[in-house]
Length: 203
Image 1 (cartoon, rainbow, N blue to C red):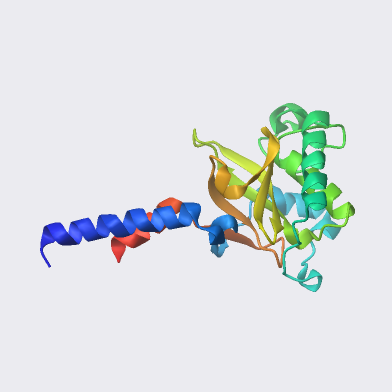
Image 2: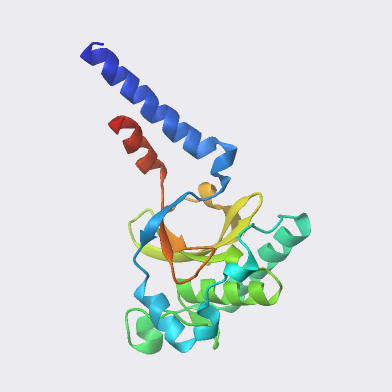
């Protein structure tokens, strides 16, 4: 094959892979990769809240059925916590750059919102295996934390910066890593559409 044909073929594969990744129904579920580093904030959180950090293999790995009632309950809780917790940085609250904790005084930053949603949704009967802390990058490159809720219809993101519950592939974030559904102390990389495109070009 000529060089021009190979280049055109590579471009076609790249665009086709990226389009399939972005739009296919199978991509309602966040694609995770290999194990990666655990955020220091989670490690420190677990030293203070060990019962909330136990492996969860016994709860099973199949995601919860996404009934209308369940999604409405999750959406309402997301909006309530976003309203009742006031966003305040760890530097202002604790004098440190990073501390993951529950916003017991209704103050906290992004990961504190996510931890509170995790705690309350689990208390409402949703398995911890379906409530996964997740690290993303905003469009300006700044790090951010959200809660991912696994369902049989896909993975939804609960975000303190948005009152709406969105499926993960409907956000504007670059997903970096999240907890394993089997063990919250194991964190996994997340495959983004850019990674798929690069892989297609390398074939």
